[in-house]
Length: 130
Figure 1: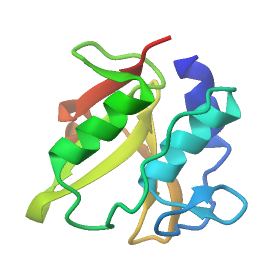
Figure 2: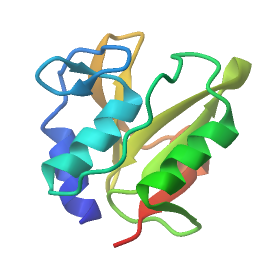
Figure 3: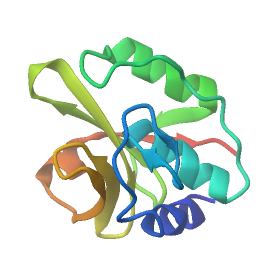
Figure 4: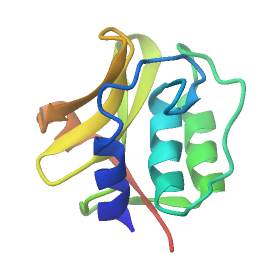
């Protein structure tokens, strides 16, 4: 399922960024992208609501991932979710592929696919249990 979720995320590249966005027709944020990618392959996840663009604490993010059925993993597989710690206590999610990550980039105002880098490689990884 993970590889299919990554492929679905790639189809969303170019979708506008929208805070709290969960629908690719209207716009996505990083959480919405992950949830939409898995929904596109038939996996409806319980969605967290009312999370801030900045200041969402790690414990709350982890709880949302676990509630949706994701578990922390040490290895890497396509479709894993990267949980990236950014400066100033911000966190970001993306869907990992073979050599890249798809994520909703607030600064660029759209969903993008970025090549694998050290930040992505060092990120915590979460995999949906099936």
